[in-house]
Length: 314
Image 1 (tube, helix red, strand yellow):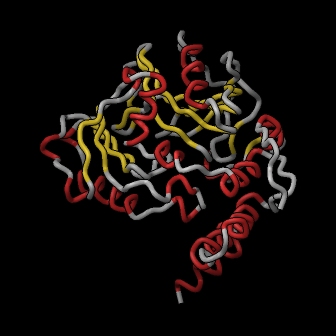
Image 2 (cartoon, helix red, strand yellow):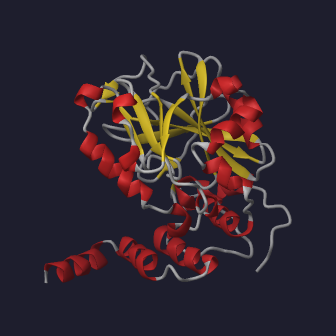
């Protein structure tokens, strides 16, 4: 009875989430285009214009269906991408790998240093990322549970992100990178990353998250480092937040554009610690192309930057 009441409550108070859950859990057999149309309608409140996509989020769905190449799998694989990136910009930008394991049970915890980062190779965003800043206070049980959940997740199926479908599932350990200028909160270093939105090989804007473990917000900036008047729903921008841009911002933009050259859209994530630039990850579909912008019109403004030359009409 309690579960039925819970379902009814969810239906009445969060219809979009309820609808989204129904599609993901019971309609996975549907072809990509129809499946994504339903998920998008649940999340965004309107249907995708497949024949003439205009918004950024619509175009990302179009790219999922019509723009996939086998090399994309290597680019989202958190282990294989290191060789890919090193071949394009150099080995010096790669965070050192400390270990690689096929299963969570295989992790050699004793071999790891006092500080480290664990990641699942197929996990998108923060999914499957465990940060250890002090091994003596590290909750290994919680870390194992998070990694096991991630090992069984599948963004390729859930949100039809084809690049993730064939990524070999492994766990990697990386060197812990810390920025002394960023305050540690909740026992975890809030390492500043810069997410560069690259359209046809050019950086048009970048995003910086802050207050991730306190009150999470994100601001968007122009390539010159000027605050832009939009953000994301759920991570609302804060115009009063002061961000000191790195002196080598132009170098970061150059790197992002080298890595994104030849792609209609690619988000390139980089770290900048004491002037040292590190590669983070490559993302084809930020927020699976289901993230709402505020103000809403910026979805279409960003969409105008994404040029789908000679796109299919179905």
